[in-house]
Image (cartoon, rainbow over all chains, first blue to last red; front, side, top):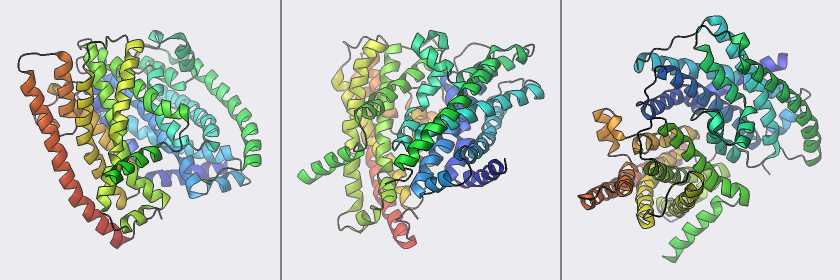
Length: 256
Length: 261
């Protein structure tokens, strides 16, 4: 636990010192909100503000995972510290887990920024749900994204084209989370993939919490997220066993 | 002339040296295609657009942006690999070398437009028989001509900073936002509309739209105006580039920022 907290604290400092990360959590939500606002400005349904908020938030969450947590691995590899991280007596998943959680906490800023822009610049009224719901949703979001990010990190550990795949994954994930269109309209095999992504459930959940009468505990999205988190948890354990062995045998955590 | 050709070809090869066939296809075709599908679905929610024109202009936008980003990262890659100082120290004009290498992006962009257009017929059921492919290629060529210098301008910042991603992301946003392919520029406030005329790719997209929508009567004049603007933007940007690049190079030599650490 101490490792987790130390890594978390360190990551706060590291992330905030990188101007690209500051851009991702502060400027990017503003830009994304403006872009989506203009694309959807003909849209003739009432809750366009909420729609914007949900989509921009999820897009930014994904960016924060992609551009920070996963590309941190590549950065560490390039600097030559990934090997020592992995070889340290503390388990890799605690060190990396701390980093992911730190990034996700920082990503909360992007929620606030897009909320302020939509509410005050575009003057679209968003009625926020009560605090307990928000905290529950945020907690769910935190655990599901942390497990996903940890699970993905194992695939990127040995992959030299990690940064390439990171960039390529962005739009497919947006598409599969139901940001652009309802998932039911996609072919069946894509629907199955989208069920395996927490973003799909989060988009659904965020849409639901704006309905004041909705009881979050009855939402299928919550259970979907929890089941998914458990699945990813098992995935992490399995991958950890496989990769630890593989890395010890191949030993390729450095650039060359 | 032959040396120029070699530079462009080598740079093209170098770009994909680490790719295998699958990642090459994913990067070149699948990813831009999915980006197009994402935006087309988003735009079609408005329900007022000519879908064929939207798909085609978005394919052009995705291809040009993806290909132009390469020119931005040339210098930054050199810096990471430790070869930037050799290029700067060479007796040739460094900017010329970088500029020629970035022209490889044009070949890229043209491939990245033609294949998705053919795919769009099967995936999105777009009627492609009536499309004038030469006009598409001209559009892409014009767009790249203006987008490359802007990307290079951003890339030259890697001489003085290592945090380039931030500027590349801004570049992508500005081009996407002002292009007019994602939403009509007329939705923008008046001042922004004026600005968008000076942003690379905006005029090329208008050029493409004029052709795809086939607004017949005064079409030729429009085309001349759009292409004229795009070429002027390109020339101005190249001149600005030369000046700024020289300045940054001097600063980098003085400050010793030609290596990663």
